[in-house]
Every structure is written in structure tokens, then in C-alpha cells.
Length: 108
Image 1 (cartoon, helix red, strand yellow):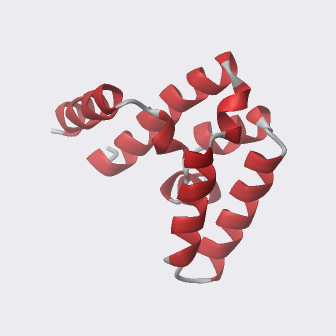
Image 2 (spheres, one colour):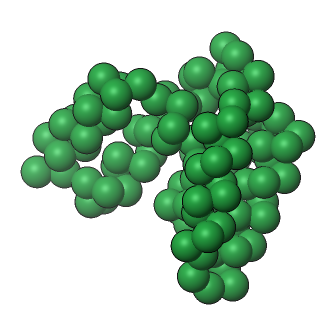
């Protein structure tokens, strides 16, 4: 069974993907770029850095299909990509709160 954090990351990415499918230009948001910069400033480890490099490429090229691959994947790299993802900033506060509440309910 998956923990609340893993469920929260998956649910966040499902919502973010829905938003990006409707409007890929959301990837051009300064919030997404700022979030990547913040994560890079706190990067710890080679794999973390590699994941941020991949995110920067996906965001810069507006590669929604590539984002979907990592956002919905079940392998270790996909899980790490979700953990360092900048896409949470695309969700509204209400969406974030719903994800947190729902993930805790499911994980309980």
C-alpha cells in the first residue's frame, strides 16, 4: 500500500496533467520556472540534479507527453521525478487541500 505522500504526489500530478492537457502554455508560467530554480537551489545529490535537468527540458520544450510519462509512471525514476516536480504550483489552494485530505483518507 502506498503512503500518503506518494498518493499526494500522484494525485497532484493527475490534476496538473489535466490542466496541462487543456492549456500547455501553463508551462510558460513564471511560477513553474521559479519553482525549478528553488528546487535547484536546494538540490541534494546527483539523481536529484538529473531529475531537475529532465524537468527543465520538459518544461522548456512544453513536452506534455514527456511529463505524462513521468507523472504517471510506476518505476523508481518516475517516483523520483514526481518528488522533485515543479508542477504542484499549477494547482489552486483548494485543489491542493483536496489532494491532501483525499490522500490521507485513502492511506488511512
